Length: 154
Image (cartoon, rainbow, N blue to C red; front, side, top):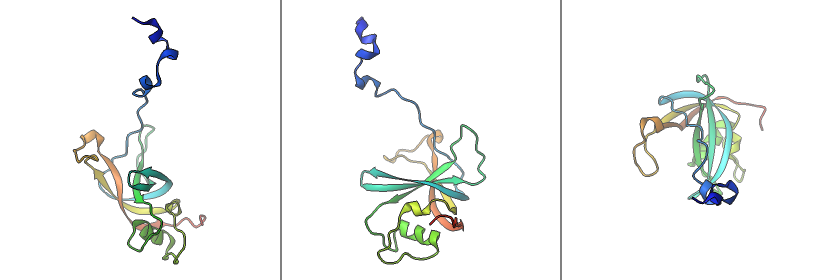
């Protein structure tokens, strides 16, 4: 047995790649309508470009310290947004008007308001294999209406 190998300073970085802490599991709620506040927006580089993920906290959901109470809505990012795009529709709903031609719109403009949303359960992975019941999670399927506009935001 090589004693030098047991010394952590002698181990290569590749040996630590498979060691790590588990992330928090995703929320799974029954499919249906909920009131939820948009609390955060993260823009990430994905395979086909950039995507914005808007985080929604479901109002009145029984939250415990080990429970994750957020669901997400994914929006594909583009340079320009037409009236049929998801971001254009949601921005119009949040602001109560359509954007002017050339006006910059951002998914971050949706944060801080309370919406009436519908959720759906994700039952298959990216390879169309069915998830085990413990791995199923909820996402925002659509935003139905703006319930409370936060006027303090611009």
